Structures are given as structure tokens and as C-alpha cells.
Length: 281
Length: 310
Image (tube, each protein chain N blue to C red):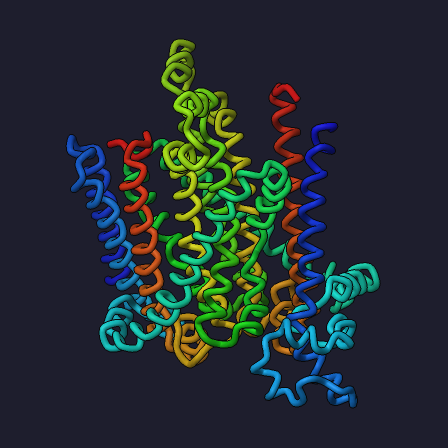
């Protein structure tokens, strides 16, 4: 019981520290901005650890974070192998192919008004579909290797990026386009100097949505057949063996990979669209 | 209405083109299988033997064996089923069976939809509550928002098999609860983000106006912030509905599910019946389309009730 009491005490301490920080005069500073979520996260981890130990929860149901950390440290080579297979080969390759194809097609569609009117509603609709379902088909077509995972990722990221890019390319005012015409700028020149930069916030919106989708696609595709490594494979087999500390270690890798992936795209966005109001500090 | 009809033309053209592309792609995708079958049936195939054909590109196989083209549309287990095969399977399993039948797509669609709706309701409630908290308490904004973002970078599919085991360990029967949890996890985030934006959308001028009326906090909330947030809410509800369906399907994929469209896909994969996978996929598409169409309708009704023009 003392562990439960300690957990509650830590919760109260963490929460009041955060409230104090948020009300303090420094609440706008960068350090506090980072400190508050970190304290919040650490509080949750500490409570998890204490509650699991204090209530005697079986490690088969929920392992304490310390056990997960130990497993993580012990199995780094397996985790790296899985990470390379699922994230670097499956997700990132598919993401690169899918996103560049979508952007190129969007530029092509944009030139042809008929295609734009016809493809855009279809693309919007397909972007709302649960495309993960095609995973078994792709595994049947491209085999158990990373190629089939990349194919699922391509299909998943394609439509959100396409729809966002087309919307972005339309996001210039008549005044701006007229200005380009008075400069007698060609189509390509207008595209490069005006419309693509104007579309960048939209494109990055799609690219950011696609990072999460890419990881989902790469992992789900492994449920339908994979070599004997990969994050999805490891998770399903470890759940079967009730080795939940290994599952949580893989989840930690997935969270880390997802955050880094998202963070990288957001970083590029800040660099490319520094002029956009949303990026000004 | 007339504008609607004018917009339908290009869409129909694109859809027809896609179906045509699909129908043409059936030939090269299935030619190897069709030739192997024809060879076993005693037809003269150039070149002979499946191993020899592996090295030949498909378009040359098609050109050399034009007689086998009809066969590619009639395979039992094609790599790419022809449109009419998918349609036959879909209509057989949708209209041709009692809705209570275990093979009816209506039945499986309902199982999926029910779980997705539960998750959607849960996720919407959670998203709206957190958004209200974030808008009114700075500590919530600083503490919860970053973690909500991190929570979305954790691919839920990584957790899905474990949620299923966990819920089962807690003694809850069946798949409905874990599926609802997974879809709620996926759909709360877009709603949270949209609602935070929406509740903050009234500008200082409007907030000041309510202050001059000496409106209470609750009145400001119900009469200004909530109505102002509705367009944002509906936009994010549509994203959330799509996410809830993805969550449910993913929840049905890990081995063991027997009901629902995701399970149909899984079973189709395990038994090597691609036509079944494809018709289940079309069923999910129709489900998603109907759901989002319904949300559009509700949005228009609400806007009309609130006095929006047309």
C-alpha cells in the first residue's frame, strides 16, 4: 500500500510543480516549455512503476518501466535489426517513393483542369479509406521482404500528400498570379518562384500526416508475413510468448522512431517555410 | 444541384478510367497463373514450363499466348481479381445472403461499424474534454499537448495486439472493447487538435464584446466558443471517423478475430482467396463513404439550424 501512497504523492508533487511552473513568470521560456511535459511524462512513468510494484501486477499483464528499460538495454542488437528492417527499409523507402510520386502527380494534375476536377474528389475519398487493408494483397504481390512493406507505405502516404499538394498549389491569389504574368514569367517559372513555395505549408501538412501513416503501414504489413525479424513480427511473436517487456521495448523504439521521423519533417518544414505565420516566433 | 451534376462528370470519367486500368492490368498480373493452368489442361504454351517462363517479361508472354487472355479473367485464385469477379463476390455476400449469415458482408460490416462507432464516441468525448481543459488551463496545454503529440507518433498498431491481450486478461469477453479502445486512441487526436483551434477561434473583439455584456464564463463558452468551434469540430470529426475505421480494422487484423471486415481480410489472406479480400476492401470503402456522407449531412443540418445561408 505504501507504494500506492507514494505514487499518489508523486502525482500530486508533479502536478503542483507543473502548475507552479505554468503560473510562474517564466512560463514563456524555452526551458519551462520543455520542462512541463518532461515532468508530466516522468510523473506518469514513476506512477506506473510504483503502481505495478505496489499492486503486484503480473509482468505478463503490465511490466514495470524498469523491466522494459532493462530489456531494451539487453536487446539493443535485436531492436536495431528490427528498426533497420521496418523503419529504414520499409517505412522510409515507401515514404520517399510515395510522397515524391504524389507531389509529382499533383503538379501534373494541376496543369489539367479536367483531371483536377475529377481526381481530387476521388483522392479525397481514398485518403479517408482504411488503406491498411491492402497489406495482405501487397504481401502476396511483392513477397515477405521489405518491398511489400514499402508498397503498403506508398499506398498509404500517397493520397494524403496528393490532396494536400493540390490544395496547396491552388493557394495563390489572383493578384500574385497577375504579378507573375506582368513579369511575363513562364509556367515553370511561376511554379518554382510562386506556387510551389506557396504550397509548401500544405505539402508539409501532408508530409507530417504521412510520417505516422508510414510507420503504421510498415508494421501492419508485417502481420501478414515477414522474415523472422522486423518490429511487427517481433511484437506479434513476443505477445505470443507473453514477453511483454520485449513488446514494450519495441513500442519504445516505435515511439522514438515516430517522434524522430515527425521531428525531422517538422524541422525541414521550419527551414523551408520560415516565412509562414505559423513558424514565426 | 446543377453544380453538383457538373462536378460529377470528371469524377465519373476518372472512376471509369480507373476501372478500365484495373481491367487491363488483370491480364499481365494473372498471365503466369493462367498459362500454368492452361498448360496443365493440355494447351500449347510458349515457352513451355513455368520455370522457363519466369525469365520472360509478362508483356511478351501475353503477346505469345493471346489465347490465354480470357483465362486471366476467370481464375479461382487470381493475383489481381477482375472487376466482375469482385462485384459478383461482393453482391453475393451482400444482397444474396440473410444479414445474420456469418458470410454476409452486411453482418461483418455491422460488427466493424459498431466497434468503430463506440471508439469514435469515446475518442470524440475524450478529445473534446481535453481540448476544453487545454483551452482553459495553461498547465494542461503545456503538459498534455506535447504528450498527445508523442502519443500519436507511437504507432497504435504496435500496441494493438497487446491491448487485445490485456483486455482479455482483465476478464472482458470478446473483441468489441479492445477494438473500441484502439479506434478511440486513433481518433481522439484530430478531434483534440481541431477543437483546440476551434475553441480558440473567437478573436479578442468578440470575447471583449461578451465581457461588455458581463457574460459569465459558462455563457461565453456556450454562446461564443462552442458555436465558433463547430466548423472545426465537423472537419475533425470527418478525419476522426476515418481514423476510427482504420483503428477498428487494425484491431481485427491480429490473429484470432473471426468477425468484422478486418477479419474477412485476414481470413481471405489465410485461405488464399483474394476475391474475398477485395470485396471486403470495397465494403470498408462503402462504409467509410457512407459515414463521412452522413457527417456532411449532419454538418449541413447544424449549419442550417444555426442560421447559415444554404
